[in-house]
Length: 109
Image (cartoon, rainbow, N blue to C red; front, side, top):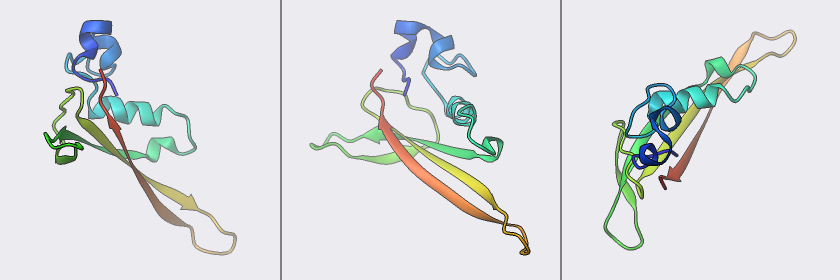
């Protein structure tokens, strides 16, 4: 995850491709990246991103989460990817199966 210190190393266009934000990647960058992976029906994928602040406790926990980007190294990003998979079975009505997954990563740069 490209955070707030990325800009000093590489430049805003690399750190935040969609908006060139100097504070690192934002929700639009993550959404664009997920959709660009090329999976079938990837245009139907939705993403929800939360930035979680690291606690001062040891070991660290990340409990205070917000949708406002906070790219400080040590904080965490949680991305939920949701997908309505089209289920097609011959002789039955077409349906969808709602799939989702949550992934977290600590910001290092």
